[in-house]
Image (cartoon, rainbow, N blue to C red; front, top):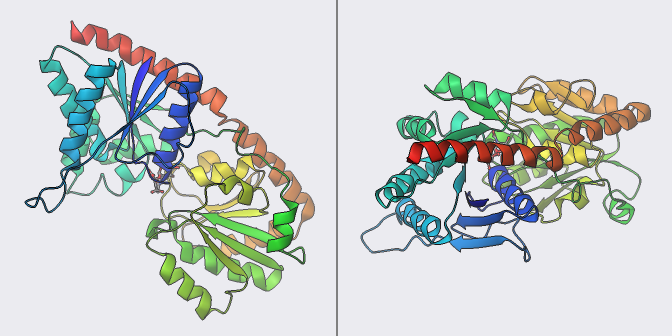
Length: 380
Ligand code: GMT
């Protein structure tokens, strides 16, 4: 198949998933065209069957905001026509589903029907989509997509709760590439970070308010009082500055390391003992899955799709949102009990295997085939 993929090219979960999906499909022989405003962060090196088309939102003195939507729609029309794409797969409904609909309508006037699959990732529904400033367009464009997928059952349910959706939403879970995420031996790194054999706690996010990094630090403070430990904070975003200030206030700067954005996050996960994810909202929790693939148990909230990934009492523990005491107590329970830590690590790996890329990619391929087949009827 010839597939066009639209996504945010950043380190965010939706962009990461879209990129990994494209690379996986290209490896299986499909022709994949990324159509994005920058080369996706995880799209490094050369890949056979993989193409990148950059969308440039040209500026003009009249525009306060360069019209990205118009530039992307025009680019989609151009790439679909020139490359004869069979399908467009857009990730994150806002604004991509609406732009794809516009491109589809333009292409129709030129005699070409290109089906559109929209994948809902989370905040496009839970935070942004339900906002009145976007809701009517989000609902309309989701309904106008030829196919819609959600990354968890919870996100599917929430989409139906917030919007009037008149079509079936297919749940296709996020996935993990075990070729990249696995427990490699990083003892030399571990010694540098925790020279006296301290336990290593880790958190990876985009440091947005929804991730509640403040809770991560509060949990760590309680753990540190009982168990010799270090905390690694990976990623960057709007909350980073105030989190650095918080670490200074509580006097734990030497035990907490801010490592910023990291390309080889799997190398850091491989040396961690526990992953902390106290998010206020999480459609799936890809960061938790990446940790689990590296045999790291997870302490998280029980919001959104997290209970579909992190199994309470097996791969880690789930707590109510904001229950810092509970999450700290659970973390201490695992860290103080070597047998529990070992069995949770193995359970985490076994659970992560359910989301192996090798099992999820064929689900997308079958879904594309089904949507393309239906589109043939629509176009005649
Ligand atoms: O809000 C974010 O964390 C980024 C966002 C994205 O689209 O880049 O992540 C969402 O999509 C990820 C991939 O499907 C999911 O693993 C995250 O759980 C989801 N984030 C939220 O729902 C908050």
